Length: 71
Image 1: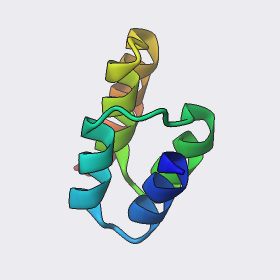
Image 2: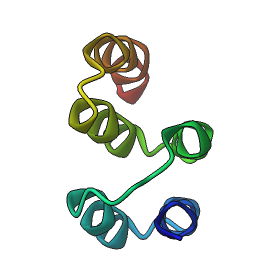
Image 3: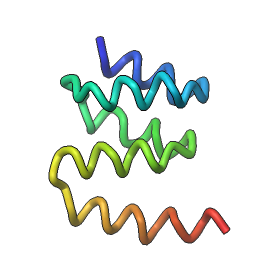
Image 4: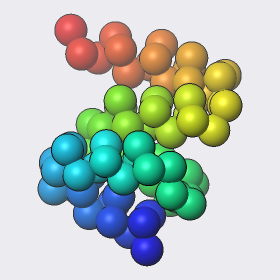
């Protein structure tokens, strides 16, 4: 349920709601959210999930890939 809500919030640019659900650290399914976050430009949300899950290599790769596109 939380994963579905996170997808809806990301697709509708409800960032306040999205970060609230991420902050609660519910049982979100990363594999379902990665593509949604990327396709909707929610890179900070993606990085937040990587960080919360201790996925440092993915976090660094995301920063390298997406931070360059923000200029």
